Amino acid sequence: MMVVLADVEAAAQVIAGQADATPLVPSMLGPRLGGDLWLKLEICQPMGAFKLRGALNALAHLPEAAAGVTCCSTGNHGRAVAYGAKLRQIRAVICMSELVPQAKVDGIRALGAEVRIKGRSQDEAQLEATRLVQDEGLIDIPPFDDPHVIAGQGTIACEMLRARPDLDTLLIPLSGGGLAAGMAVAARALNPDIRLIGISMDRGAAMAASIKAGHPVAAREVASLADSLGGGIGLENKHSFALCRDLLDTVVLVSENEIYAAMQALYYEDRLIAEGACAVGIAALMAGKIAPSAQMGTVLTGRNLDMEQFTRVITGQDVRLDEITVKGAPYAP
Ligand SMILES: *Cc1c(COP(=O)(O)O)cnc(C)c1O
Image 1: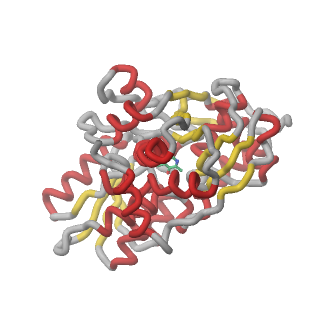
Image 2: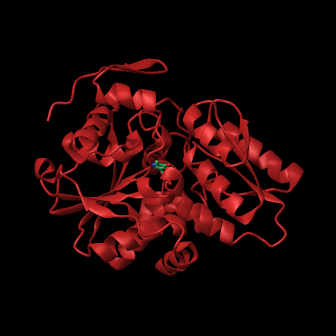
């Protein structure tokens, strides 16, 4: 195994005091969902997402002479890298596609990082990051397919299982799989019987399609309420694909309508403002796509949402996502 529990524990030392110890709180939705549900509030991280864990761990392992760093990102990773680079006073160039919401772009610029918007997909943004590595000697910090990043994200599972050793299921939002791979490495090592479920949206779910195909495949990138879950896993994926394939029990897909309803439930019942990506586990439970268990945990991965879109969701209005419209409905408890 290329990342093991010891790597995750080492990462925990590296990020201690900077990106750790977020609250784990019980959801009001538990009774309705058929079991206790614990929410790990990564929305409370600096920069509003868990990505800081992996980014800080990767930055701590840079070669001494690094001229600066670059990365491609759907937004939150770029913001975490920009924040970490600022702490270390090194140059950061963040490459993103046109699908990234403006709020995230603005957040990154505000940290003093350079931003490059390239193409309509993560793969196109990655090409620009690769060019910067070749032409300007920057070091690429991948958003998910990197052992240090994976180990950093895994620290979330250690904290959750230390706080609640009785957790029997982890519902993990799944995109490139850095989060799921790291959490699965740690959780499996700490409790071999724990149920580990990755959840993605049903449009453009690259990891789910790749696991099914048995090798990394490309997926069409589309606008989603869970925009942080968009993007491919990289056809040359070296780490996160194999770990997710080997360690997750299953991957479940949810629709935009299901995410919409779960965002409302999280807001009205738990009074929490969270990105669509955070709501996919709750969406799968509400839709009956996952059998509940006694002690479930999920990660509220980030809160960097487009407030105009969020307002439409919680007020029951339609939401336009490129070529589709998610039909609005008022919250119905
Ligand atoms: C990056 C991200 C994810 C998915 O993480 P992966 O490691 O790419 O699977 C989920 N939610 C939010 C808010 C994110 O920023």
